[in-house]
Length: 194
Image 1: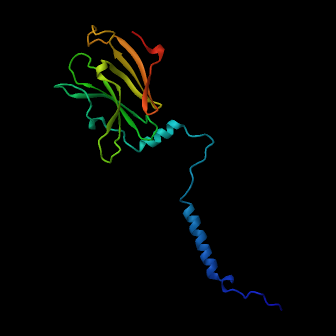
Image 2: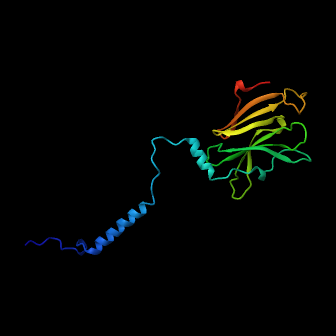
Image 3: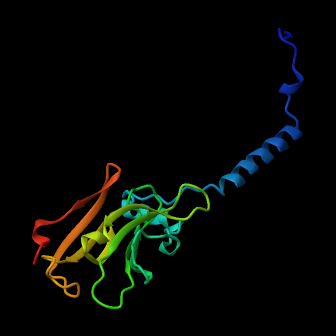
């Protein structure tokens, strides 16, 4: 009989305890992996609008009631006429578009259209990041909506200073899209009428 050049090592001999420890480790890995299942596979890519909606659902949009709007209303209050929400800058957090005017009892007070976002500081009030329509322009915003990351509105205005405040006589469709750190307004040529 020939003796091996290296003496037999104790840890190369398997014992039942080794098999039991290996079986326990494999069982633990299998049990743990059952909790980490991947999502169901699909052949199509998810719709970006669906991703945007899913991401924004976790964060509440800014509340316009918590914002002081830059309107000079004198003795009457500021009134938020309409809001629309959506992710306008693609960061996964929703913004609020607020149509605001003075709560006047007569005439057609001009609207201000403001974009609100959450403050970067914890527990701070929402802040105005853009003014899309300034009340000084004497326009009334109607049909304001957020669709596909853009703000759309119908703007009612006046052809001259002689037109009374009660009766806007021009209509203009407007769209604002976030590009290069600013809201860019576009007006379709066929949408303008008097």
